Image (cartoon, rainbow, N blue to C red; front, side, top):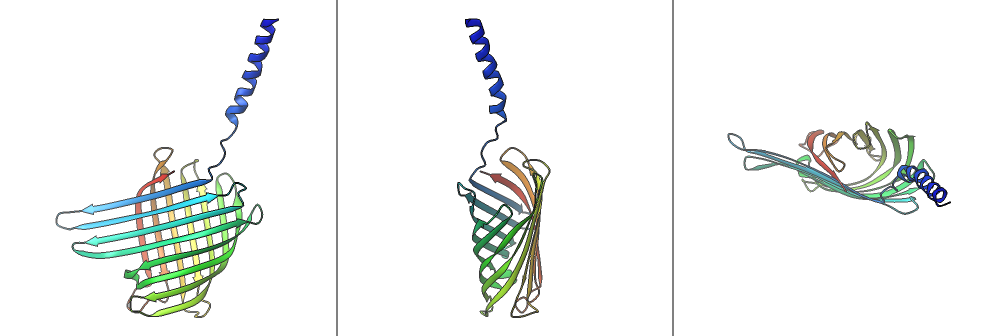
Length: 244
């Protein structure tokens, strides 16, 4: 009888163990991703370039709300002169309306003196739709409006309303390696010549479960820049990305 009881117990444990092992871990509600890159040249030429960005996300227990905070900076110095300073930070809240549809509200600040922007505040409101949502591919389309309050380095003020269209595509090669393409279109609704386009292409390759190599190429186009400044800025960065 005892032999039968022990055999039954062992069979039960052996049968349930694989089920427990196969149960996926619950998704993290809070996630922090940060990356940084540095180039330092000394000798005949003195050059230093520093770039970094971070993204903090938090989802509520029912997954209906997601709050995010972002920041990015680029600093460059050649010899004794500063040649690049870019700072951008933002806050955003997303509310899921259905499995694929969501609404969002956000605000951001930007400073880019070498593009003629002393400061720009932007508030956005719109809807997002998950056009593709599979384990490997995700495509999100967004549409809305953006309110802008901008001051140039020439002390010129420009407040305007812009439409906003955006798309974000991500393809996962593995759980932690992926390709990502972002695009944002911001036509000024009060001036047809004023159009801004922002794109970023990124490739992330893991070194470990939390550390990865990241390379990104961003294009920032402004069809009506401040007087004396070019329309297009291109930024190529590479460095280490850490996820917590």
